[in-house]
Image (tube, rainbow, N blue to C red; front, side):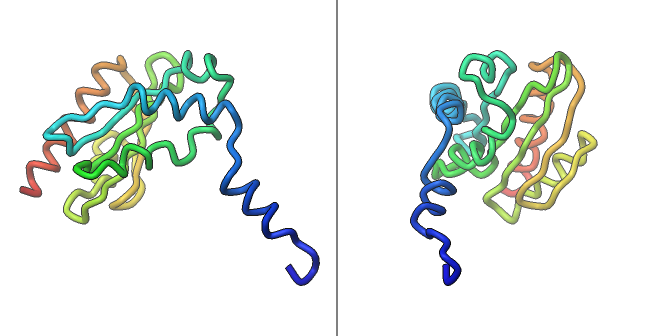
Length: 144
């Protein structure tokens, strides 16, 4: 700032300005997220068609998972993203130190840390979803 940086402009561009394509994805998230397991699991899908419909790309997905993770009863949030037909990228977030999403991601060849992890999983989308949600349910049941 001493050298002339415009703090107001920087804050506006970094924190208060999203491309329209990102807002299209956000609308999709709020319209299509699902809750399961006594509302302790929240998830949504991002398919190639969703990106194409709003003119978005992968960089527009940053932080979208936080919108469903913030729902009060949710313990684990998951995003299923179609990378290509037969390949799904998952992102997991946990709000509890009793549910380690790194361990869940590791079951699918992925990794991360206890509160945030991910993996790429081959298979049909519904099969991938069933397996991942099943693993999350097991982890939630183990926490009591």
